[in-house]
Image 1 (tube, one colour):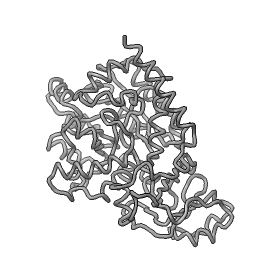
Image 2 (cartoon, helix red, strand yellow):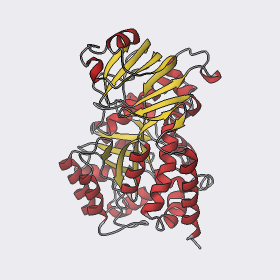
Image 3 (cartoon, one colour):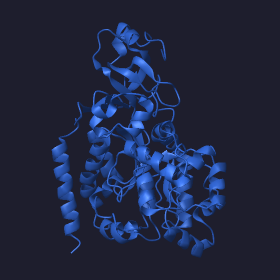
Image 4 (cartoon, helix red, strand yellow):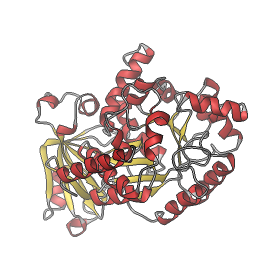
Length: 442
């Protein structure tokens, strides 16, 4: 057992989840005929199901021997409100500047909230329990996460130099969002400058300093485009990673989305700054290129997390991204074993948790961790035979296999159905929001 199964006693346990195979994560081997006990949104027992049933005989038991239980996935970089662009940017190599920004100036909190609900619903139904979102009107996204039950690591995007919402109040607005959510159980605020080219130096220094003082991560795009590289070269004669490091800003927890255009010396800087985690978004990197050398970076001891980003990736499913990461790194390196499925599994769980500073809370199944769980069907054709269950979570499982999902002990998906709202209503509301947004373009 992962703890004394009698420590909490039946009176303190809310429910038990049983599985034929339990994948704890973080390098711990799978367990058979196992389960977890949940009390107050946390795991209080992890181990053989027989012991859990004997210790807690009068509590509800979910699942059964035909299921696999795993930690929920962590989407470490995305833009939930950007679901409005789904299907619109497949042939555009510069969608941020040519598609997103011209439209995003027309966004409202109501539209972002309706759009975020769609992406949150998809995430939960795919087995993604934690979402690191970087977008405008973060309060609306927080409301969507609370309603449907997702854990959100959310930041209010800051632009000061150029962009659709560049504003003299952007810094104070973003930091106000952080301060208002510091004590929230399932909304974990982050400081969210957009990128080194879109945020001025004075604002960057203030934002990174505030993040350090408040004890939260910084989440930004870093070395994400040739335009960013060119802008920084003209502005200061440096690459963006070197620029931030010379300002003394990389000595803290930094979620660095993309890093596709970072140079070899800049990756050396990242390797030396243990708090910096590049986020690999495999589908977007493959479509827009170049591809982050994620396997090589992991080999150097750098924590690499996974993200879905948004369009031209039209899915918010990080399990799909893990599978894509395995194949893309094989193509990039010429080595089919460059990124084994178990390493991709770690990137999708503990990698994201570590990047966000939540590694003592989420990403693995152990006593004391928050009860963010995914119960997978193993009776489907796609999961038969079960073979290596850890590898199959990456190479075979999909949303069809997701039976139940819990976040902070709250069941948010049951029998493959979204529980916080009617999925059809969420989708219809999102479609109406897209129609309203795009109708204003003229």
